Length: 138
Length: 138
Image (cartoon, rainbow over all chains, first blue to last red):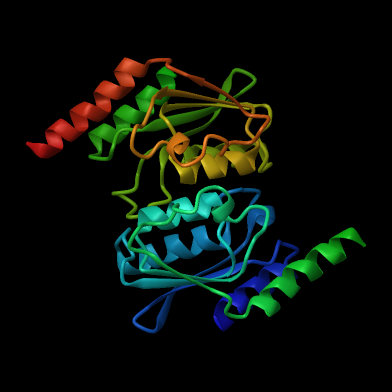
């Protein structure tokens, strides 16, 4: 999750909502991504989407059952839908998203085989988002 | 929807599940896409996602409130999530997807301002998908 947080900090520095994600396979990072919706002016450029595409490119396979995603914020429904299609093995998210987290859309959006873990580096990930919006309001 | 169906036929010819989408702004097509998940080995490469990215690139804006999407199959939750973020004005889909259509996930996945229309070229779009799976089984 430390590496996902590093990605989130890169988003922060570029004026993007600070969310970062990495995909790990056999203890090796094979995909990274941070939110770039502003820079690319593309709503699909969430950290998770970029990390999924990057990992799939690395493996040459669209399915990621042996992989784990670490992401600093609970995925939104779009990203949860993509994670479903990828059949990813595990999703670890740090902070919950009380507004646009996928749980508020449907509890069962991920693939039935995907295991979900939460809470790792929760405070640090949350603080970064809160700090971003505090600065934005100034 | 004729143009979306043309895109779906291109997917069919390339051995992809035949779904096509276009984004229209001021009666002009500004984004097109057809399913390329096999060719790109990327679960995020659905017709709708590619058409959204393409339209946003054209406009230089990630928001598409003045746009209409025509797509040959009911969007899945991933694509509905992306359409939500884009705040697209209208979504017209041809055939319903009884398995992975977004309605089975949550009725209210699209943006509250997005109007939804269905049924245009339903039979043609459905036949194309059925034909694809019939051939696949042979």
